[in-house]
Amino acid sequence: MHMLWIAAAHAATLKVGATEAYTTIGAAVSAAANGDTIEVAPGTYTETPSLTGKSLSLVSRDGPHTTAIVHTGTIYIDGGRIQGFALYPGTANAVAVQTGSPTLQELWIEAPTQYGVVVSGGTPTIQEVLVNLAGSHSFSLEGGTPTVRRCVSLDATKYGFNITTPVTAANLLSVGGKYGIVINEAGVTADNSVAVGASTAGLAVLVDATLTNWAFEDNAYAAECFSGYDTTFVDSVAYNANSSRGCDSNALVDSDPRFAYWVAGADFNALDFSPAAGSPLIDQGTGTDTDGTMADIGIFGGSQGGWTDADGDGVVVLFDCDDHDADRYWGATESTDGIDDDCDGEIDEDVPVDTGEPPDTGTMDTSDLDSDGFAASVDCDEHNVASYPGAPERLDGADNDCDGIIDNGTAGGDDDGDGYTELQGDCDDTDGGRSPGADEIDRNGIDEDCNGYDDNGRGQDADADGYTDASDCDDTDPAVNPSAADPTNGVDDDCDGRTDGDELHADRDGDGVTPAEGDCDDTDPGLAPNQTDVPDNFVDEDCSGTDNYDVDRDGHAAPASGGDDCADLLNTVYPGAIELCDSIDNDCDETIDEECDENIGGGGGDDCGCSGTTGHAGVISLTMIGALLLRRRHRNS
Image: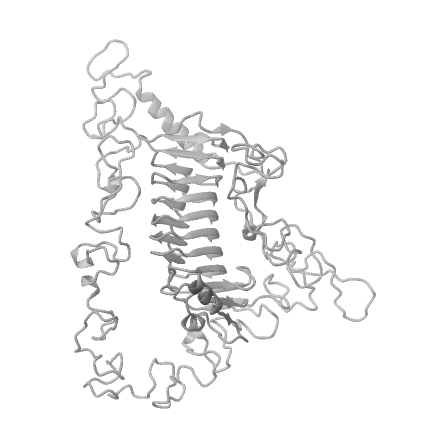
C-alpha cells in the first residue's frame, strides 16, 4: 500500500499545446514517466506518438471534436489509455494492441486504409470508439480477450466488427458494410447490438452462439448463420428483409424496431438509434429496466448501456458534435454566436445578419448566397459554404477563415513566407530560414536546405570510417557504414534501410518463422506456416494461399480459395455429385440435368422435363436471395 501511495504522489500532468510546456505529444511522451497524464489542448497534431513501454494517460482536454492527431504510422499502445481524440491515420491502421491492458476511449477514427482498431493480443478495454469509412474492417478483434462496448462502425468496406477471438462485447452499432458484425469464435457475448444497412447481412455467425436483445433493419439479410452451427436469438427483432439465411426461421421477431431516426446515407450527427414512441425496443428483453425511459433491446439498453454524456444535454458523446457544451447538439436552436449550435455543419444559418452597409435602414439583410450563415458583405467567398469569417482552414486552395491567407496552418500553406509549403518540401514551415534551396551552414546542427543533412556538399567523412555522408547513414558513428556488419542491436549498422539484418531473415512478429521461411505476414504472429488454418473465416492463418473455405460443408471449397465447387452455397452441387432434375448443374460439368433422376411422362434417356423435386428449393432460394438483395427500403421512422 505504501509503494502505491508513493507512485501516485509522484504522478505528474504534462500539458501539450501551442502555449504549453510541450508543443508536441511525442516530446511529452518522451519526458513522461509511468503513471503520468499527458493533457492535450485543442488543435491538430501531425505526428505518430509511440505509446508502448510506458503506462501513460494520453487525454485531450476538450474531446475528439476539437483535438486531432494526423498520423502516418499505426499508434501502438500496451498500457495506460488514450482518450478523447479524432485520429486520421492516413495510410496506416489507426490503433493496434498486441499486449497489455490499455484503454481506448472516446475516439473518432476517420478513414483508416485497412483497420480502425486491431487487437492481436492482451486484454484491452475499448469503449465509445467510432470508426468511419474503414478500408477493410472497422474493428478487427483477432487475438487476446478484449472488452468492447458502446462502439460504432460506419460504412466499413468489409466488416464493421470482425470477431475471431473471445470477446466480451455489448451495445455495438454497425451501419453499412458488407457484413455488420461477424462472430467466428466460441465464447463471444455481444448483447444489445444493432446492425443496419449491410449489403450482405447485418450479422454473420460461424459458431454456436446465443445472442440477446439485437435489432436489425434494412439489411439484405438480417443474419446469416452458417451451416453446422446452432444460433439462438433471444428477444431480438428484425425489419425490412428480416429473413435470415441458415438461421432458425423463428429466431427473429418480424417487427419494426422504430428507431428515433434512421435513414441510410443521412449525416451521422442526425442519426438517432434510441427507441421512438411505441418502439418494441422499449422495456423488452432482460427486464432489467422497467421505468419506461430506456430500452433493453438495442445499443442503449442493458447493463452496459451507460454512454458518456459529459455536458448533460441528453446527447451521448459519439452522437454529439460537442460533448463539452450543453447548448450544442443536433436540433438545438441556432443563435448568432459564430458556432454551429444545431450540429448540422452550418453556422448561424437562419439568423438575420445586418450587413452594416449604408444606408442603414434599420432592417436586417439576410442575403446569403451560399447559406453559410454570413451575408455577402462579411463573407469573403459567397460561393463557398466552407469559407466565412472564423471558419476552420482546410487544405483546399481557398481562404476559408477570410483572413486573406490561403491554406494557412495546413500542409499546403506557406506559413513562414519563405515561398515553400510542407507539401513542397519545407522541413520547418515556422522558420523562414529553412526551406529547399536555402543557404546551408555546415555543421551548425541545423538543416537549412531541408536535404536531410547538416552540410553543403554531402562529401565529408566526419567519423573517418571511409564513407562520406553521401552514403553513410550516420556520419557521426564509425561503426555504422555500408560495409559494417548488422547484428541484432536495434540499429541499421550497414545502412541498407533495415534494422538488424535482411528483413527476410528477421522474425519481427515472434512467431518462430521468418519471411524467408514462408511467413506470409511478419507483423502478425497469428499468420505463419506453423499455425492451424481456421476454415471459413476469410483469413489464411497457415499461409497456404487459401482459407479452406467451404460454406456448404460438402467437402469441396469455393474456387476463390482454391477449390472446385461451382456453387459453394448448395451442398447438392459439387464435382461428382448426382445430377438432380432441378435445373442446376449439380455435378459441375457445365451441363444441366443430363441423366437426371426424374422425368415427366415416363420417357427415358434425355427426355428430362423436370417437376417439383428437392432441387427446386435451391432455385427458389437463389431467386429469393436475388430479390432481397435488390429490395432496400430507406425510410424515415
